[in-house]
Image (cartoon, rainbow, N blue to C red; front, side):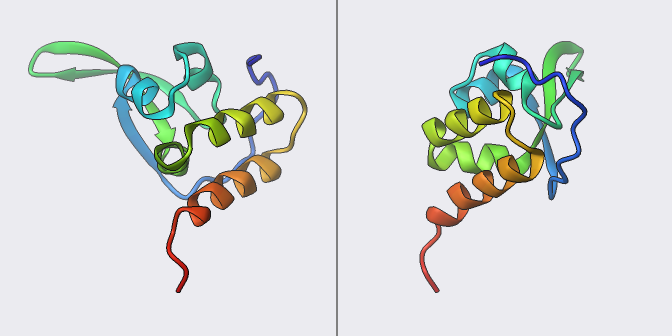
Length: 103
């Protein structure tokens, strides 16, 4: 999956700060792919005197990946191939909504 070189305008509802390793585990993506997700920011977190590479990642991406890693990877691949921010966010919401029980 190529990096996303354009300016990101996607409006995510919220963010989580997790270790890069945890983000990789939850999403099934490589480090490079995680860092290329629109809205992700790389950080260094210091906890108990130990430095850890972390990311600020859209919570919706993590929630969707827990439900369907492959669908999230596919949505990000389409985004990287010229999809719009709005289309990406809509697909992420669809993944989340597909995993919720009907009212």
